[in-house]
Image (cartoon, rainbow, N blue to C red; front, side):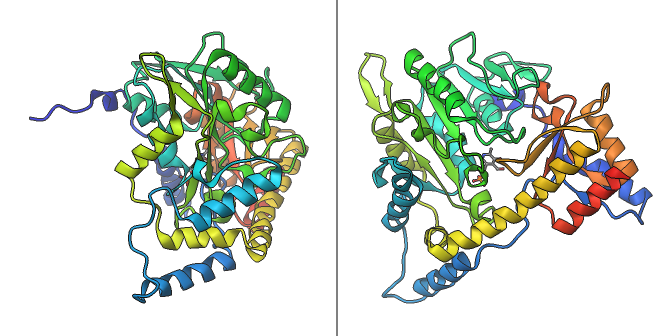
Amino acid sequence: MIQVNENFLLLPESYLFSEVARRVKEFQEENPDVKIIRMGIGDVTRPLCKAAIEAMHRAVDDEADTATFHGYGPEQGYAFLRDKIADSDYKKRGIDISPDEIFIGDGAKSDLGNFFDILAQDSTVAVTDPVYPVYVDTNVMGGRGGKRHGEHHEGIIYIPLNKENKYVPQLPEQRPDVIYLCSPNNPTGTAMTHKELKKWVDYARKENSLILFDSAYEAYIHSEDVPHSIYEIEGAKEVAVEFRSFSKTAGFTGVRCGYTVVPFAVKGRDSEGNDVSLNRLWNRRQCTKFNGASYISQRAAEAVYSPEGQEQIKETIEYYMENARMMRESLTEAGYDVIGGVDSPYIWLKTPQGTTSWEFFDYLLKTHGIVGTPGSGFGEEGEGYLRLTAFNTHEATREALLRVKS
Ligand code: PLP
């Protein structure tokens, strides 16, 4: 029989969301009259903007005619989209990124998971705790995680995010080769300021580390001093790869489109000490293992940058952020300790003294019919927290807050 990749056996069963679903189902069966309000939703709920929908209809028509049909596209993405991104997301912010440094993909999750294909297998890796689980699990699959002790894998460096450090990642004592940073952060909802991110860029430059910067929630930034791109920090182009997504920006969670920026200046080393361009290796990897995001998705993503598209996505983001504002204010008024919800659609709520994440999850479900996500599912430091999301309707959010206040 074929031997399996045993690294997969080091991963725990994906327990968090299935356990949430099980407890909700059990409660609903026992209490069929309670209208449950879901505030753990990690997906957007409002439809795609009109500009993207219209662009997709036109793209479908293109595919119906020999003269405009598009088969295999460039593996790196179509120039019409790469040019728009370089101009709108970077040049307009004073950042010089060439379209050839931008790789269109089918969303940030795959690229974040695949990027290690081009890095040495035995690289050391640092993540924050709590963390978006994809960073940890993909490294465990790749053999860099090692055995699990409690919530931690012995081969991974964990950087705590907690009340003491104001949920800002602090530089680690042990030098990692690769550092995953997520800002605005899932799950804590906080975002790093220019000054805080600069500390990391300077560290990576000094230590020859690589930063994998996940800015999937960039469109939710409202604070002036929070950078929208890591390349706003001087010198970042030499040490950082940036992952972006149209999922939360423009409702593409089902349509799928995202992009990864691999600057020409970011270099790795081979075993003989020669510099190797990561852009060149990522291009090689994508050409071999990926056949490009669909023409239809890329046309939809292009339309997001039109003046109408920009206005429409802003309206939807502000809709969610109004929920976040209501949640932050009402929960604070009700005496809860909450953070986030200013530059992200996530609220990170400290459970009342002495209550675990799961105990508080059960309390909210059984007393108020509200579903959150237990923070302990995002790492050891998440114990004693609950993540709430702003992706529900205004009406349901208001109702949930009234229930909590009462
Ligand atoms: N990064 C973070 C922090 C996320 O929370 C998510 C999705 O929830 C992603 C990446 C993945 O997004 P995509 O839909 O582009 O794969």
